[in-house]
Length: 434
Ligand code: HAM
View 1 (cartoon, rainbow, N blue to C red):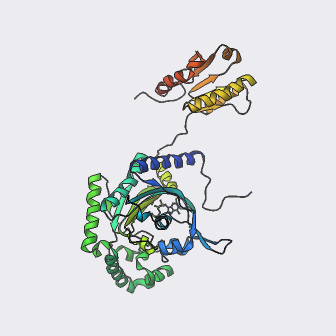
View 2 (cartoon, rainbow, N blue to C red):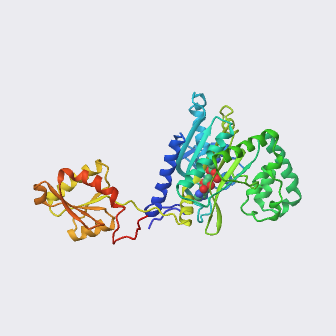
View 3 (cartoon, protein in one colour):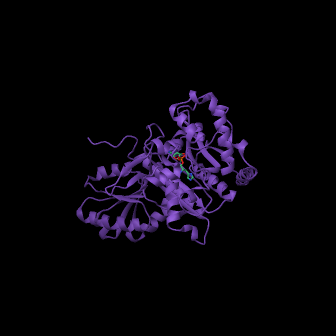
């Protein structure tokens, strides 16, 4: 048997419903917050990610799906969405559009060669937002609040928003120097990767997975103590706007993020899943990335969230996503009735009803069972003689009431009956009147 690659999943059934539900909420909110959809290629030139994400990051060092294509070009399956969006912004000269800033949202698969475990996949689906072309802290606050609202609408109650600031380029330089001085006497106690990180980018030591529990990390200098006045003001403004928006957050000086392009605001949304803390989303400001990739200096901010992790968080909190119930099931026995079922199911579907019919030529009894399995609200039983009289039998599966109605009134009948159907008491389910 050929099996799926490690760390990848077939997403269908219950998991498929979670994915769809999360995507629907993201699309709905992205529209009201006025973000435009963007889809960039799933693979891009390797250089984009090496330069954009940073050579010293784990993502670039250890997790890239690199390959050489048939034309001998170095390519990479995208590990995240931001670098591709920035490349598209530059290549399509979107910085020249009159409607700045540009606000994009996306939803797609990303690839990271990680050690697979719960919530850590090799093929993952992220939704994300990017605002390109503004330095205003209201953009940072809008992005943070968007993520929070997505989780709220999905029903998540235990999401913690943790924010920090890395400061601007100058503040980061000061911070880097403090880290070098702090780690220098201890670096021999760290893993081999951290020894390299110490030389390349000591900030990366702070999010090392191997040394995460090393007590030396706990007392390491904090970015907030190295912010210059401008960076402090930016961060204070972000916090003020979050207060206005009513977004609860914690300032957490340990957040540094695992990608090199950040400056100023960084943040994560954290949930506890099976007793472990897991980031279901994260992002921040990246004012230098457009320039780094060859575009004009453009301040940007964004975030992304792993749909698989959001789905895990929803299950942890016991938030169900029930299968869609169908409005009506069309039952038939003979060929003439079948033809009518074919015609009528299309008419009803085009009128907006969720309709199913029989595909396997089962007995009428088995069709009743199938309709029950699919949770049909109404059964529409086609009978040649009744159809000749322009009549049709409809059965409400809750009240068990059967009615013979005129064919011409079927759509009006369903329109009228369906809203009250779900409020009715019945023997087959336990719902209670509010
Ligand atoms: P990131 O923190 O690397 O940021 O990923 C964002 C989210 O993707 C994580 O919080 C997590 O929910 C999910 N994720 C990451 N890796 C995995 C994995 N192996 N398995 C399952 N889920 C995963 C970024 O990707 C940035 N591009 C976010 C951003 C956008 N920053 C600015 N704009």
